[in-house]
Image (tube, helix red, strand yellow):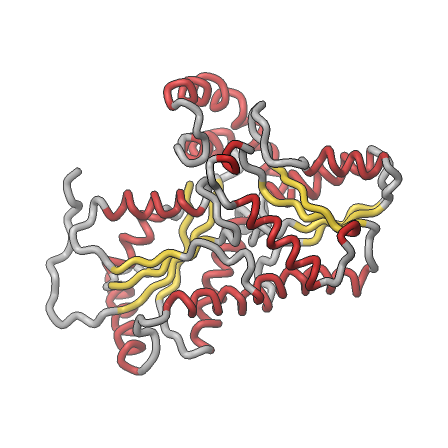
Length: 363
């Protein structure tokens, strides 16, 4: 693959540091056409679906992309906002806030967000940063628990971009922060604030995104890291083990995924006489289709239909102060050794932004 054209190297150009927040992605609009483009990219990722390639592409293009986009578009439409996709709105806000949180702690960096699937793509954001003079880039996925299906896929996308670039910036990656004390404290604050205002339900359900069970036997640490997050949160809330439980949602296909599954568990709880549940999704850092539609609409309805009387969905961390402070701490740990402080670095960043403004490239 030939290298893409790039500006000639300029001796003495000030070097700058950037942070890229990476989230999963979202369609550009709640329409079948937009959802089809998004699903083709998402489900076409070898990291996401690991069954034999030829067979899967036949199923994907012959069946799924012919039937699923229209159904999914209706689901996206039910949670779409005037500003657009909730996941994109929250991720954009997190990037802007993180720049401020880092600045308050004396770190002056360029901050962007990118989507693994959809827009803005990882490649386009890295192109922009490189054009503006970034020579060091920290890639920070918004996935607290590591999985090959998510975190490693981000690394793949960065690597694919890197193969087209001649003069590469230094690159660093954050793999996980599932047991980070600040992250756990942010989750605990979300739960305790809800309890203080509304009282406690009979059970606290922690719903994580599911992955095929075979990924566990193949060495993926995701399941273990989800359980670690749950254990630490339970300890932080001083909860007895029988008062909270871990479930997994968003199953795709007929293969066995990590269990117990969220919706069947909620139905079983209701039939066993549990009348109220509080549910939080610790692995999702921004509210999105899987939390707002799958949980707060579908799972809620299933629990209430089965005999439950009170279902409380606790929003994702989104722009919560404790979460943003924790994310800043994670970034700072991984920026160690790179120049991000001092007047010289701030001047270089300001000059970079001015050049971008003059070229009409800064959004």
